[in-house]
Every structure is written in C-alpha cells, then in structure tokens.
Image 1 (tube, helix red, strand yellow):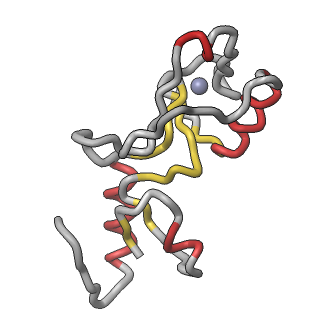
Image 2: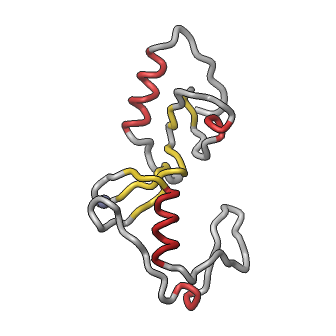
Length: 124
Ligand SMILES: [Zn+2]
C-alpha cells in the first residue's frame, strides 16, 4: 500500500508493506545529518533531560499544536541528534507546501512495479 497518511493508521489496522509517501510521525529526522530515529526514543531522551517538565497547555490549536508561554519553556533542555549530536530534529513527515522526498517516490514506484493493478482514491 502507498499512503499519504503519516499516523500509522494502516499499519495499526494490520497492513504490511506500506510505503508512507509523506513520511511517518513515529520517526524524527535530523536536518543536519539526515539520521532517522524513533520518535519514542526522542521522547525518552527529552523526559530524561527535563524530568520536571510535563504535559501542560492552556489551549490546543485546531492543527494540534499547543502554544506555551515563554516562562514555561525557561530551562527546557533540547536534546540533539543521537548520531551527530546536533540537529535540529523534526518529525519525519512532509510539511505543507514541501515536496515529497525522493525516497517516498522511489518506494511507491517499486511497490507499484510489483503489482499488476492498483486502486487509487483520494486527491492526486
Ligand atoms: Zn544528526
């Protein structure tokens, strides 16, 4: 399956051999060296670096983002990439208006070349 979903919905439903054209929220990518790592691993490292920081927000925006006042973020320790030590890190997904990475197109091409037919729905 080739999907634009980034939330692992198809895999959670039992699908295998899934090509995530727009990436996946379960991973991070380092913008310095390109390393792809587990987002759960990043969460553990962030919790270890910030043991007194917990979930908190006054308001969650419609896009799922939360805005926190600067004073809440004072002292927050950001962790770096596990490979290069730098970063920044971002979710391994295509942000709005950005092109799909070549790996997604290559994966979709390989996937479709192994099928006699495919069923497409949604918007191109
Ligand atoms: Zn890196």
